[in-house]
Amino acid sequence: AQAVADSLDTHKRFDYESAQADPDFSTDYVWTKGPGRMLGVLVCLDRHAQEHVVLKAFSGQMTRRWECPGWAGPVASITHTSPVYKRYRHAIESLTQALEQLHSCTDSC
Image 1 (tube, rainbow, N blue to C red):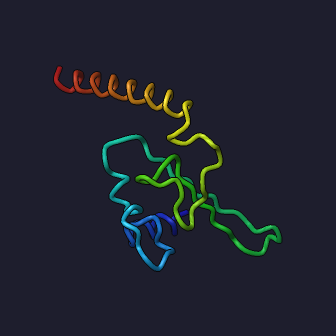
Image 2 (cartoon, rainbow, N blue to C red):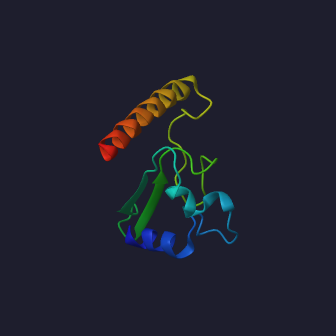
Image 3 (cartoon, one colour):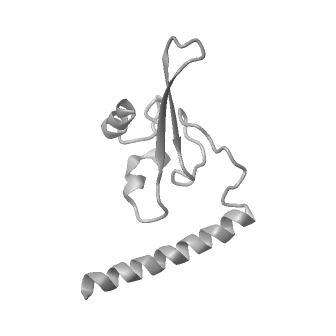
């Protein structure tokens, strides 16, 4: 897991295993305002228990993309075009805005 973090820091991109960098996978995106970003790294053994295998995934989209080379793709069919996604996305954005207003109020009080 630390090797993945180090590679992200060194290369400043999520597609660091690809020969050609895609600007959509810059790590700069992680620090922008917007929905939360969640990354996961699972270190396991192959089925013969001979080699370590590193599985990497991110939650949702990375910029405008659902898939990134070297990372696990979506495991569910709920994407930004799904009515379920749209309904919950709106609710999450509303709650986020309310929390930001509360935070702003507590900072100035």
